[in-house]
Length: 492
Ligand SMILES: *Cc1c(COP(=O)(O)O)cnc(C)c1O
Picture 1 (cartoon, rainbow, N blue to C red):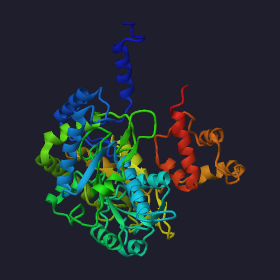
Picture 2: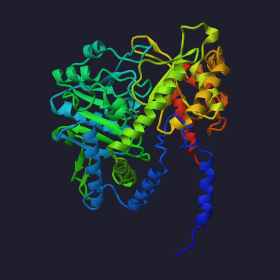
Picture 3: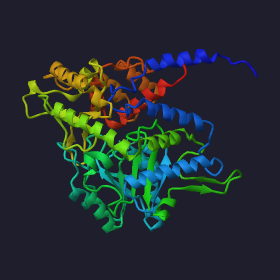
Picture 4: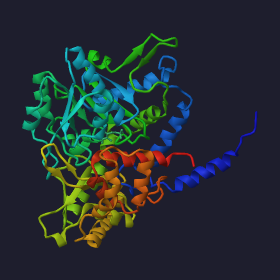
């Protein structure tokens, strides 16, 4: 064979060097994005399963039959823990976003087949995941966001009921929501949806493999036990502890679910029958998730959930005990958000974004979430998000100290202001006359706020960046962030 252009050892050394710059994926230092079971053997098992299926093509489970078997068994597990009967069928997708996209696409097509005309609506609370914004955008639905109580993140059933009519192709409730861990009024909404003949999706992307064991499984019914629930998304790559690329979408009713598929025999190649968005795809995340679920079993999930639950309870108490901060609403599941406590005088308040930046100085990464204006004019506050995993429990002493000390450091410091930047940008912004900047102009604007077009100069303090995002018109903020991410991968 021909010689490699570069020696494998050198290539892997370079990769190891690049990986050293990444945020840590293990050990509970990053409280978002990664879900660490703390079980090294589980990671080893997943790696071995990935290796075993590395060359397969998930496009065709009739050629690579192991894929169909693993998928069927995983769906069976998910259906059991989410209380589906034999009428509930499903698909393994590449992630929560794809599960949500497909739930929306299915509902849209079912709605149309039932005679729906015009633009279908997608009804959900403000706290619904961005994947549904994306789905509405991709599939041509009007996203109708029901305002939530700014103090708690909870939507009112009446407000949802008032907008739940025949033009709604899908109503989405969350178990729980990502930004604030709000457990939506699922039973009430599912019952109303059933009464009015509207499909109802429960987005349990984050809660799906934790809530079945949360508080010993003693939560109000939120899954297929509710007859009005037509589909549920649950991510294996979150509390299923699988590497990224695996989620389950379950649908009630075979005929409904068949609307999820795309099939064509009208091209010159092989007959295409795709339950998901991709064509050729990896079987690696599926095999890893399948191996992990088999290794853990329900007892393993119960134990890991209990660990995350103890850590969550402890941290909720810690944050509520910090003068100037408050936990938002009544979170359910291993996650929560913190907002400023406005009941104390300004000089005793802790801004959640200044706090997050200070916490980073203590070696933990918590996630900044911007404030947002809702359709009714109310404003949900900016917050900081914490996702708690089983390993968090072992970090509790260090993390508690970090959260408390960081709050002491920034107590009384107000939210970062973008006024100066907005003022400086003023004349430049006016030049666009309302139109969005092109890529050169966008790169120029980023440079003007000190961020290099290749992402260089990304601020280590994120509070000012979030303040800027909140202050700019959303379309402009989105355009600038698009430029930032696009330039990041341009060859230099
Ligand atoms: C994570 C998440 C999603 C989207 O999932 P991805 O796996 O990031 O694509 C959707 N809904 C909720 C509630 C989530 O937490």
